[in-house]
Length: 218
Image (tube, rainbow, N blue to C red; front, side, top):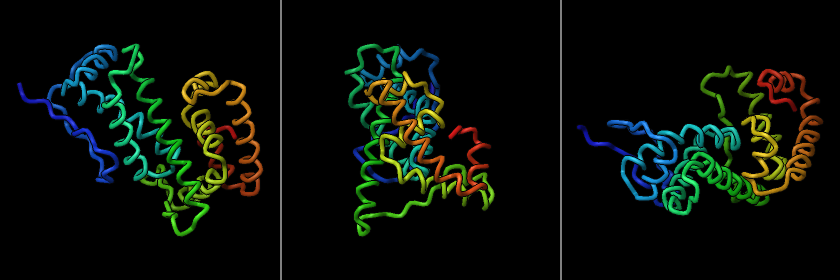
């Protein structure tokens, strides 16, 4: 039997390029057994957790931040926390939600930091949105950049609620549970974000077309 390789547990942000290693023999186990193996620190469970959930984390983070590079950094931080806190998971069968909740928390923290950096230009690192940039033409890429510039004008909470609802297709109940806020707060945040974005996007018909094409329902 060939040895199982797995990603080393990151030590806080290394900012090293993120790559998915190749598994030797992936195990066919449910999330419950995987969570128990992870809590025990089994190497196969660390590897399998990464491969099973990293795509989910990366996709959500990239949609929220508008940057593949930032999504890679966030994924490292997320799994660092998941590996450290695995023993605190009370219901092993909820491992997927456990990982996703860490991803949302890290993204929310990063959005707050980005907003603070925006108040102080000398701290701001300009990030060019690159969601889907690998497959979009130049015109569509420019429009996507405009959309993320508008998202930057929302509060971190409103932006995250919008991303989870429109881009991740989460229900109001799921968002409320993930963000630990009430359903009424989710609805208010969504209404506020949609209202502001609708006003801004209406001024750019081409951008409105991109939003319709992606079925984000603003």
